[in-house]
Amino acid sequence: MPTETVYGLGALPAAAGATAKIFELKGRTADVPLAVLCADADQALALADEPSAAVERAAKAFWPGPLTLVLRRRPGLGYELGEPATTIGLRCPDHEVVRVLAAEVGPIAVTSANLHGQPTPATAPAVAALFGDGVTAVIDGGPCTGLPSTVVDATADDPAAWKVLRQGAITLEDLLRG
Image (cartoon, rainbow, N blue to C red):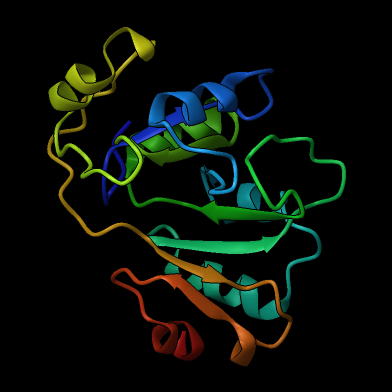
């Protein structure tokens, strides 16, 4: 599926075995967890364990957009997203197709549509060619050539202790000003 950054492989995280298929397709182990794309901040933050006021401000300021916030996972959530099982990477992408889909079916576990460590194809036909029958469907949203989302560990209550895990278009300074 397209996002405003790159194409992603997605699955419903509540469906048994669905996320395991993503790890298998990518040739990646579960020690690199999947993120979860959501329709809006309310849907996303409902998956977190008591998000702080700073997290809520960051979500309001930068979602929809290319920001993944790693937060403490809501106890008992049950999604198999990889390790650690106590956190969850959440994002509300700035792509209407994904937000409408997540509003209809619920949160979507996702990772870039590439083989682990390889470049991500920029078009739906290239994604389809790479994964073939391994994927059920490919949603063509046109070329996706942006930078991957910024990933920030926001598990600390104090934003000064947040850490950038992957730099994208949004900087930590942007978040702290947000």
